[in-house]
Length: 186
Image 1 (cartoon, rainbow, N blue to C red):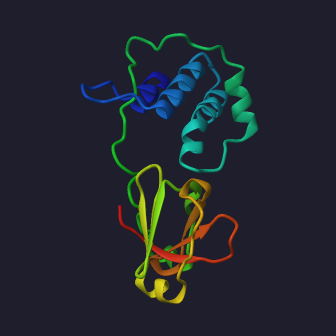
Image 2 (image 1 turned 90 degrees about the vertical axis):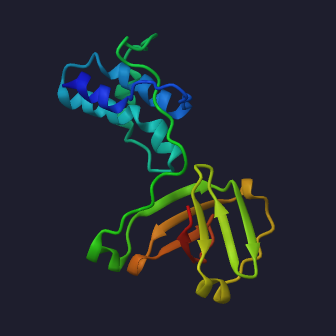
């Protein structure tokens, strides 16, 4: 069963796909978990192995107990013959899906304290681009009420985007209290 889950977690390398460092780190961690025989420990190790991807996506870190369990496992020098490099996802992650009536009250973080790759400010509002390719644009209604005057370089800025009420999204820059209404462009 564990081998099946590992095989599902790692796609066989296909021609033309480059290796992704973050995914390879996760796969390397997963192979360290294979020696565990207790299902609960294996699952905790598995979650700890996903920490590099959690950090890349700006998600909350895995609990220390899971990370410690992973650290106690021996390093595997080579992947099993049945496992090859992870496939690289092209483009940004998929757009969040509305969850029906529960979106009326808002929801979780879509992006948590992520760095900006670039931003563009115009009279019509701003557009921000994240390192993973996501592009978010300020809504027209919000741009007229809350114009921005950002001057700092994009590399020094971090954003959090939360699901707002009624299928909207709120972007906050750094530690500011100002929320900007945004829509996902890409």
